[in-house]
Image (cartoon, rainbow, N blue to C red; front, top):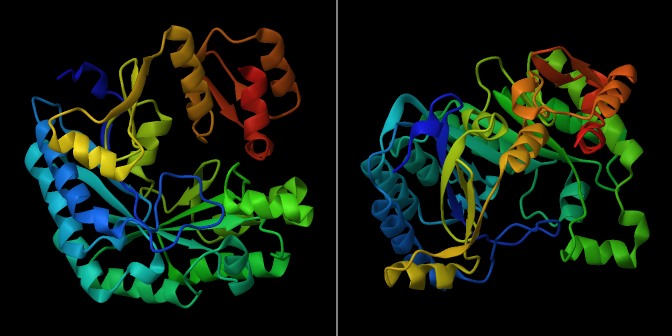
Amino acid sequence: MPDAAAGRRGQGIYVHIPFCLRRCDYCDFTTFADRDEAIPAYVTALRTHIERTAGEWAPFSSVFVGGGTPTYLPADDLARILTALRRSFPFTEDAEWTVEANPETVTRAMAEALAAAGVTRISLGAQSFDSQVLSTLGRWHDPESVPTAVGRLRQAGIGQLSLDLIYGTPGETDASWQRSLDAVIDLGVTHVSAYALTVEPNTPYAARVRATPTLEPDEDVQAARMGAAEQRLTAAGLRRYEVSNWAVPGRESHHNLMYWRGGDWLAFGSGAHGSWGDRRWWLVRDPERYARLVAGGVEPLGGEEHVDAGGRRLERLMMGLRLVEGVERADVDPLDGDALRRVVDRGLVTADQHRLALTADGMALAGAVIRELA
């Protein structure tokens, strides 16, 4: 297996668990809330696919088990998947092992099983500490379940905890957003991800927006919410390192940094996407089909493509410019000189002969800046 591209930016492994207790109204990921009977065969297929891909690889620096809700699986099944990874691939001594979780699925037994399996980091989907906002989003948990889950994880020995928040949900107020930020800070977690609510096509939330246009998020309100998050989280000692991510210095997500810095990663599980060198591929979305193909000895490939130098440059611009550290000019040049001057003159980007980076004002307009430069 090739490993030459892995060195500078790290290389990781992504594993997708598509099962959920309930599908959130805004979610457009590959998730299913009605396939519990498919779980045993799917777990077997994942382990088989992982073991089949073992070979001469350079050490991996991160694993991310996402979903869906990975912690919806039986704890023993999740542990078996992690064990298969450890037995099949080499890892660096400080490799980061992250599992996504929803608060209502973090039982004491689950927390202990994750710690015993070597998980070093949990990404917990809090989204809001406002019951009305959670209801609007179609979330299943209540605000009180978040500190309960955090306590169980810490008691089990998992100290690196990240909380995900969503801002700009209609019905959210300035005060309720501040309460959510205060609740996160009071929990003392090491990492916070805060994302603006987006209306994805073909989701229940999009259907509700069509019926009730007032449910459309307000971009000006969302910009204000982002500014409030930056102010409050920074004051609490978390440092912004990407448009939507803050961390205690040294506790940034290694796996996500690998994505943003242009590293390579393998992918396992239905709907998962992988990237290695100039190859991009994605696996079949249906978990039962994924399991059947793997059981039959067939690679469960949904499709693939190869990017040229121009495509790679565009990827690096779109991903790397989101980082506070910016992106190396060598990775994204040549750029349109007029477009670059415009965003620099507007105070949205700093540029020298080595790097481009968004300013604080540019962070609030990251998508528009990247589109202009692309």
